[in-house]
Image 1 (tube, rainbow, N blue to C red):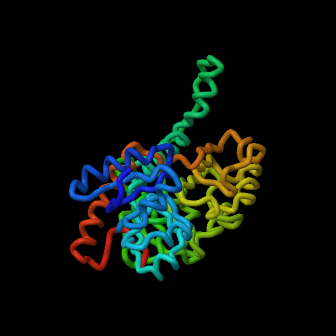
Image 2: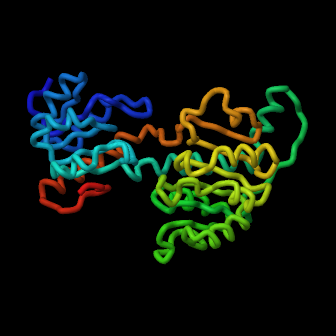
Length: 320
C-alpha cells in the first residue's frame, strides 16, 4: 500500500469494471503523481487523509471528514445528486462528474433500439426460434421524425448518429434559443411539446431527472403521440409515468417501447412491463462501455493539471 498518495481511488467499481483498471489509466496520464487504490475501508480512511484528489462513485460524510487535504472529488458517474454536495462546498472541495463519457455507447444503444423496432427484429427472432421461414412486414427509418428530449452530450450524440438515416429531428431543451443539432429546437412549454409529440414517430428521452422532467411523459403525452410511435428512455425512469405507460400499452395506444431505465428500478420480476411483446427492457446497461475508465481518466488528468495551474473552472465541475 502506498503511504501518502496524491490521488486515491476508492474501492467501488462501476458497471462491472474493476477499479484497478481505472488506477492504471490514471497512472499512465499522471506519471508525476502517486495514484493509489484503497482496497478496504481501513485503507480508504488512511489513504484519503493526505490525498488532494479522490475518485469514486460515492463517498460518505464520515470518510469525507478524514480528507484533510482534499481539493477535488472526481465522481465516476454522470449524476451527482447522491453526493453530499453541501459538505463538499463547506470544505472548499471541488466536485466533478463523468458527464459525457457515456454518450457514444448510449447513443449507439438508442439507435439499436429504434432500428430493432423499425425493422421488427424481435418478430424475426421469434420466428427464428420456431424455425419458421415466413415473411413479415417491417418499416423504414428514413423519412420519420425523431424527437429527442435533452440535448446534452447523450442527446447530441444520438442526433449525430441518426444524421445518416435521413430523418427529421426535433430537440427539446431548457434553452431553445441556444439552438442545437436538430432540425427544430423547442423548450418544455406544454403546447410546443404536445405539438412536437403529435408529429413524432420515435420519442427518445435522454435528459436528466429534474423538477421539469419528472413525470414529463404521462397519460396526456402518450395520448398525443401517434399510436405507432416508439418510446425509448435512457434518461431516468421517473421521467415517464410508468402506470400511464402500462395503460397505453394495454390499450394498443403506443408502438414499441425500449427502456434502459425504469420506475421502480430495479424492475420487480412480477411487474407488468415484463409481459408485453412490444417492450424491450435492459437493466440500466446502456452506460456500459469498455472505454469507461480511459475516457474518465482523460477528464480527471486534465482537471488535475488545471488544479495545479490554479484554474477556477474544471471540466464537468458541479461544486463550487
